[in-house]
Amino acid sequence: MTTLLYAVIGVLTVIAVLLLFSRNKILREKKEAERKLKDTLSDLENVYSEINTTQEELNVKYREIKLNEDKIRKLAYEDSLTGLPNSVAFNEMLIHTLETLRKEESVGIMYVDLDNFKQIDDLWGHANCDELILDVSHRLRQNLDENDYLAKMSGDEFMILSQNILESTDFNEKLKRIGNSFRFPFITSFGQVVVTTSIGATLAPRDGTKADVLIKNATTALSEAKHLGKDNYCYYSEEMNIKGLENLELQSSLTNAIRNESLIIKYAPVYNIEDGSYDTVRMRLLWDRGEKGVWQARRFISFAEKTGQIFALGENTFKKVCEEMKIFTEKKVILPLSKRLVLNYDFRNKLYGIVAETGTDVGRMIIEIDENILISDLAESSFVIEEMLAKGFGFRVGRYGSGGMSMDILKNLPVSQVSIPVNRLLEENETEDVIKYLKIVTSVVNELGENVSFSGISDSIGEDVVKECGGKFVEGELYGPLLTAEEIR
Image 1 (tube, rainbow, N blue to C red):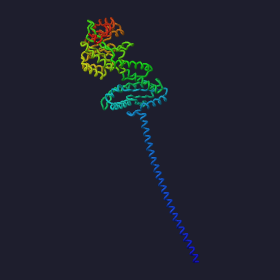
Image 2 (spheres, rainbow, N blue to C red):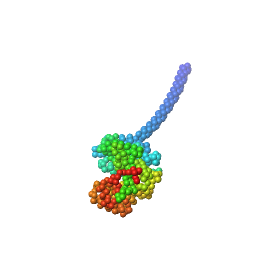
Image 3 (tube, rainbow, N blue to C red):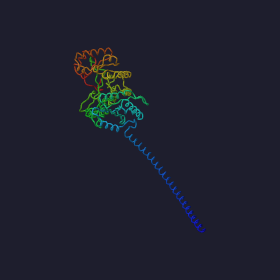
């Protein structure tokens, strides 16, 4: 019994030992499994962390790419100086607008260009002109509304797309408003600057329905506006394309003539009808065009004003006259000046400089301004006359009676001579009426202590009218050919 008991105890002991060993093994395996799980969780956390980091890096990269895309798009579609849409953006907007244009509507394009901007840039420098361009863009914005799309093209050029136009008069008023807004000077950090604009305008569908055609039309109209004297606007017409080619040829020829100093200066004496003497001559500018003949100034001066060539032409002519006045030292010279010359402050200053440089006696120089110029801008013309009188120049009103100037205005002008185109008056009126008119004018002018000169006399009829009116001074083809400086006695 005891033996059996010991056997049972032994078995139980073995079982207990085995159970204990199994338990310990299970515990060890559990701990190992927990450790591996913990390691796995740690690895997963690391992987998750790496994923998050990668995601954040990807987000950063995405934002950088998006930012770069925005910058690239901005460079592609915006002007870097003004922030306005550029030519690419304007073209796309115009194409889209034309595609959605309704039958009852029109769209208008304005091509705006600053006049003489190169001279402004040369004078003030590039940085200052950037400031001016910004001011110009602000002023343009102020004169537009929600139907307008303003874009900055190259340099000093802007394009405006006006949409939803129901009446062309509305577009025309906007054109005028924009042009007039530049009458006021720009107040900049480098001083007060006056800038004018030339604007070319075209309308769709009237002038075309394709974007490239309309832009070309606006460009052509802009060129015509500049030819018309700048500070102006002009609508496109089909005739401009043909005229443009002719103008290019004429402009090139005139440039060469000015550069080569091949224009001819002659003088028309202002004769005393009583004894045939003269103490004053009127400068006449001629252009020998070879097979096309010799052109009088009236055939190309207006064109030179439109193209801006008038300034170089006027400066060269004035300088040559000053040099030739040293040849005939006893005579006075009448110098007819066009509107753009006489009203241009910079040009007048150049004249004063030439007079000083050549030592010319301004007391021998009489500036002639046509009546129509005086009437068109009487206040500024009067100011210019006073300014040049103070410098010593004399003044005469040219072609009096052709522009509707009243006697009262004439009385208040500080001029010393008045020229009346006799033959032109005779062509347009009855001889008796002309004689009555000339007698009145002569009487008034003489009372003012001024001289009346009767010009354009080409036949004996004109001379008889002058004699009938008691006229004393005459000029015209009837009294002989034009003279060179050397022929003046």
